[in-house]
Image (tube, rainbow, N blue to C red; front, side, top):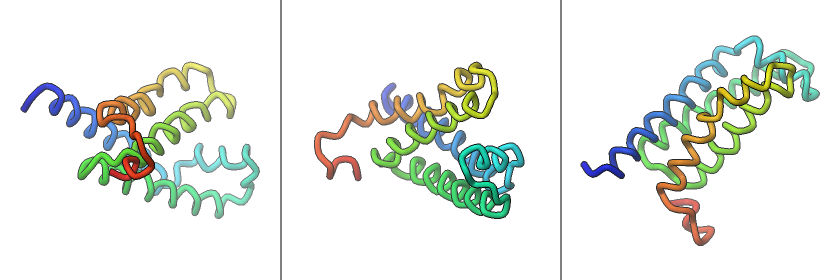
Length: 127
């Protein structure tokens, strides 16, 4: 295996691990996360729990997809979602360092996306 393939697999496994971990927390209905929904207008805990379950399923599905094939549009979503969920911490009152600590949540999928090559057409986003 050449170095770029090894790096690709390390990133695929790292990204999948990140999103599987968060997905499982979502399926478990992590209490802190449910509370954060209220900060953005979702005050019904039952609805927040359902939304968190959907997010958890999506996170796990994307993690599995990345292990099978690193589709660029999925990686872009993971970059944006990873950045948002990291940024969410200081927005809900946690220290800025909780955001900094989570840079790998969006940095690893970004690195994998760049390794795959930035798409030159809409069609390439789905390859």
